[in-house]
Length: 277
Length: 299
Image (tube, chains in turn yellow, purple):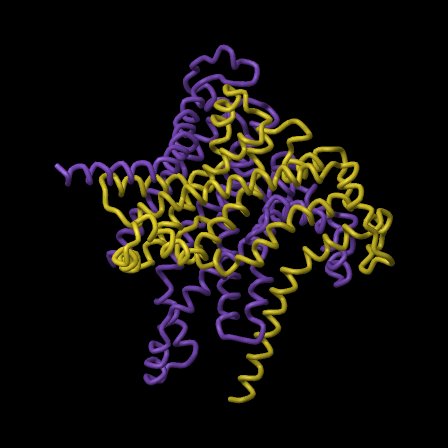
């Protein structure tokens, strides 16, 4: 019996390690490629341990390849869109959680359906709409499209966590002489900060990663977001893999950081069935 | 009188709080959906946008005479079936492994779950480097293990390319199932296991008689919803092959996107989009029928 237990422990450790290696190695390898010198990137047999660390690829990326601009564009679009979607969803999510009214069920269904319609199916009509407004090659057009991508699941999530906060807490504050709006600000919002953080992080990750609409909407170099820039790296004849790797690291880093801080909340939101992904 | 005023105020309050969210969803999700359906029956390309005509089923006839469409359709079936099946099995296994606490489990979870939050497109590009025929890590490892003698050009060879994109998609989706199933596993009350132990159940019997029945509803609904999500997930393919070589890794989603980007034939692309929406709708209706009867305990 004891021996059996030991074997199962070893096996468990072994399989857990395999998953860990499968998760880490690809990211580690791309990092390694990004700090190799070009001739070590294309050396055969392939180089596992570079002789010296070179930041040439990053210099090229931010210097010649204008990546700082793309990074700024992406930050602007994602943060603005996530902030707006978060604000809208706090308003609508609160109403959906606290009040009964006509068409409520209908509205909830429209949200669930909306979040099942993928962005790439909507991009052509959206493109015609924004080109009529003269908003092609305009980062604000992407902001608006991304608010839409984030708004429906954010509202569903917000409704979820607002409805788990007892109404009696607000009522107690109101008995103490606070107005309803005051009670929302002093009681409900502080209690739902983790949920709000999850909404923001999740919207940020989704909009940061959005590729297809952005490629269609943006065709001037200075307006490119990070995914659009990576896509343009592929289209050019032959990928320079050391530069591409550096670009990938820079593209992935913000979402890795957000995920590291917000994983607990995102996972909670996900498993409560609120989020599509 | 006073009461009706309060009622009107409340109605106004509700309306304006809901207004921003639903306005944007109406204008940017529902209006484009309808518009996209109409576009499928017109001849809107970058060249005809001044004078768009109704053309009936012409776009669909063009699509149905394109052998690449049927490759993409058939690929979509395999893409969904193999991706979801392996994501599920390997994710389930990971969840079972992570179920009992061990030192550093929180950190471990943070690391093995990370691909889930990252850009599928960026990770697709990343994997195309790992699978590179000459300088790729995967080929090197396979050769060191003496499994192969020459590097394989995974992504430029049609017979390997499709398997490769599915394998990467499996890798990408394992964390999702692990997260969902782990949460379900942790919601099982311990008393159920204690009761089973009193009845003399071993660990295999506990798994089949307690664990599986308890998490079955979560698992079924997660699986069914995942199908829709995987069908609409062109990002990894786009990062790895863009649907090539020669359309061999196209699924319907990438097939449509390529028509938008490279042919700029927006109506033809919309027609493909309408086909995708029809498949989604049919699937969703079947799903709803299945789950509602499931919840009523008929199945």
